Length: 92
Image 1: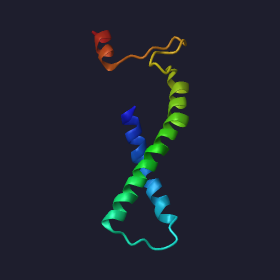
Image 2: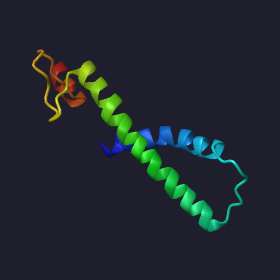
Image 3: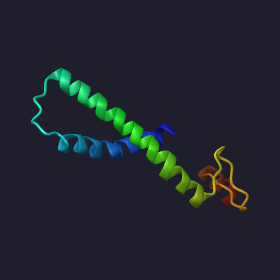
Image 4: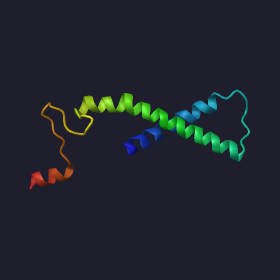
């Protein structure tokens, strides 16, 4: 799950940073301290948005498409997940 959140954060970060910059009314004179806190704020907001996207978009879509339950087992639709290593064993 951390990999999914990291990738979602990567995708969302540019949008959060652009929104932060475009919402400023006055010019911002950056000091090192100001840049540090702005970066922390943008990273935290990006992670929060990434968690929301994962919970309300990615996970439900994966459940619909792949029929995977929360515990990782296959749904009762007769579908099974086959790993690439298992494919090699089947072909031999």
